[in-house]
Image 1 (tube, rainbow, N blue to C red):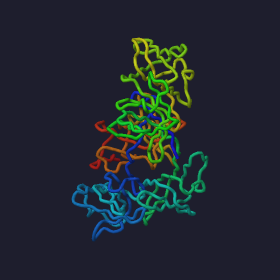
Image 2 (cartoon, one colour):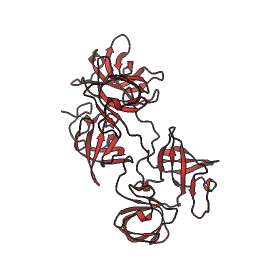
Image 3 (cartoon, rainbow, N blue to C red):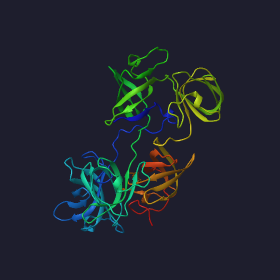
Length: 453
């Protein structure tokens, strides 16, 4: 199945389409994570089964895992300075950061933390089987066992009061729960994320053209193959009925397309951008035919549009100039033709966030607390006003100097960036939350970097 993907080149088109096209795999967050084999930066959690005569053995949701430590492994033990392997005991709950061996079942730790019992942990994967009170979830590192009870909460898209009966085999889920003595999870919450369009921007330059495929170099040197076919529409200034033959190495392009499950992009629209791309912000003052008059800080400017101009208006699928209202904040992307005339490649109305659209927010934490049984929220103070970011078991955290961060390590006053998808109510469903480097932290921390009570 293909998912809709919007491709618009240049950071200057950020207001038209928000959020990058993801190509890097998300960091694994526990036994159910999606870390590639032998990839550093993964995590595992479980209960210590054995501690002598070789590696530690953990009881985890995916079964027994050998936890290998060495002289370079750092141990974090509550209320203990200079913790070591000797401070751990059978039955302890631990989380480790490190990497998996290619064959699986063995995890090499460069950090091990002893945690309080009954701490909730996340897990994500695909439902393999559903029993009366037991689920099997297929994860990157094997099947995980999850139990449910009368206290388990459910979130299923488009279901008003979901329960266990609304889960189906093959469904992708994320959950959080506490460890049972055998390492399985007792789920507190199970959610089926909404599968919707992946929207984002792809900025870059054409580096190769071969047949019906061209290669685009995006930010940080990443390159993507973009396929075209007879249905692809090309727009090249000064060229009638353009095709891929009019695309050249060095061109900067914008476009629209679809990405399949393997991340291959098939373009439906390709626009060659002007050599000197500029952005203009202002307020819609008047509309005269195909010309939009924009009131900017430098005065009124005529924004020239034509049949090739792309329009983006929140909530409007195939927007045109007629969908721009006088007084709305507008961003135009294109090139100057004269001091008072600007030829627009794209015009976007600023404001309004479509449900499912990828986005991000950055600001100071105003509050962090439970919203309900299922969702927890962080409220950020941003230049555009307060933004509520909802976090759940799938959310990944990054906190400076904290090896296994969680929501507990974020406090009021922290400078935080959150990314995710906008909900219909204007909240941001966060897939990632990061405390920004070099910013003052909101409260005292212990030696491990965690908040002090």
